[in-house]
Length: 235
Length: 282
Image (cartoon, rainbow over the protein chains, first blue to last red):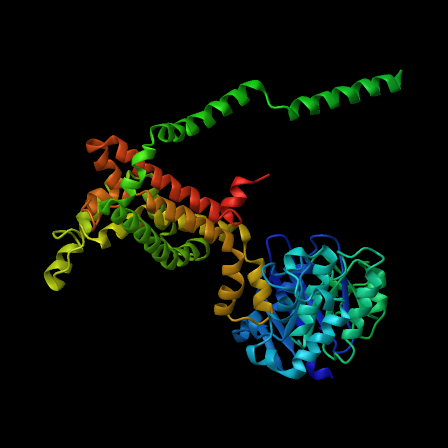
C-alpha cells in the first residue's frame, strides 16, 4: 500500500502565491486541505496534476517521479495517472453527459465490456443514467459537478484530486453526492487530495485535515502523517 | 421626518433608474438615421429592379457563368482559408515567437489595404515578371494572372484575415481551461485539438467562414486587377455588374439583385447558427 503513496516536497512560484509544500498523501486515506481564498489550494492541485511545474524539490508517486527539476524529470498531465475535479467543472458542452464521462478512455477501452459496465455503474452512482444522452450544455451547476466527479473517476486514476467537489450543490443535495463519491471510492487504494471548506466533508471522508496558509501546509489535528514543516507556534 | 427623506431619496433613485432606461431622443434620432442610410440603397435597388426582364437576365449565358464562377470560387476560397487560416490563428493566439507582432500586422494589413492595391501587389509578385511569377513561368511555364487561380488568390488575399481574426479572438477569450482538463484526462495533444479545441471554437469558425465567404463573393478590386474580367473564365458577379453598368444599367441592377438574393439566402440558411445569433441577439 505504501508503494503508491504520493510524496511531495517542493517549491512552486506563482504570481499570487509561492507554495512551499511538504506532504505525504498516504494511500487509502484522503487528505483534506482548507485555506483562505487565494492561499493556493487550486494551484497545489494544478501542480500535482502537472499543469504547473515546480521550481525545486520533487513529487513522487510510489516508485515513479512525476516532477523533479534536479533530475530533469517532468511528466506531462497526460502521463500522470491522476483524476482531477476542477472547481469550475470544465465540462465539455458540445458532448453528451455520457461522452463527457467517457472522454478520457482510450478507444479500445470504450469497447471493452468490463469498462462499459463499470462506466454504467459510475453513471448510476452519481445519478447520471437518465441524463446520459442529454447535451451537457443543458445541465445545472449541481449536475455539472456530478459529471465532473464521475469523469475524473472514470479514467481509473491512481491518485484523485478534488477541488471543492461539492461547492455547487445546495446543502440538501450535498450528502447524497458525497455518499456517491465515498461509495465509488470503495476499493480505491490510492491517495486522495480534496480541497474543501466543509467540515462535514472532512469527517464523511474520514480525511486527514490540513490548512494551507502562507504557502505552507499545517496539520490541523494530531495524526500520524503530519507535515515535516509543522510549526506549533503558528496556529 | 427621517422616513420621509428616505422616501424622497428612494423615489429620486427610482426616477433616475427610469430615465437611464429610456433612450435619449438624440440617440434614437441618430440611430434611425443610421438605419435609413443602410436601408435606402437596398430599397433603391428594389425600386429600380427590372422585374419583367429578370428571367431574361437570368437565362443569359454570361450571367449564369458569372453566378457559377462567383459561387464556386468563393466557396473554394473559404475552404482554403479554413485549412490555412485556423492553423495561422492557432499560432498567433498561442505560440510565443519573435516577430509575432509583425505576423499579426501582416494578417491585419489586407483589412485596411484598398483591395485594388492588393491586386497590384499580387500582380507584382505572381505576374510573369514577378518575384514568384517569373520562376514559375520560366521553369514550369505556369501563368497565374487572369486565370481562375488568380480569382481565388485575389479573394483569399482580402478575405483570409476575417477568418483568422475571428478564430484567433475566440482562442484568446476561451483560454486553455478546457484543454487543460483534457490533458489531465489523458488526451494526446492531437486529440485535444480534435475533440476539445475545435468544437470549443466552432461558433467562431462558422462566423469566420461566413464573413470570409461573403467577402470573397463580393471581391472586386483585387480581382479585376489581378484576374481581370474575362467572361466565363475570370468574370465574377461583381466584375460583371461593374462592366454591365456602363452598357445596361437595368441589367446591372438585376445582377445586383441576384447577389443580394444569394446573401439573404445564406443569412436565412444560417439563421440557427452564428448569423441567427447576431440577428436575434438580446
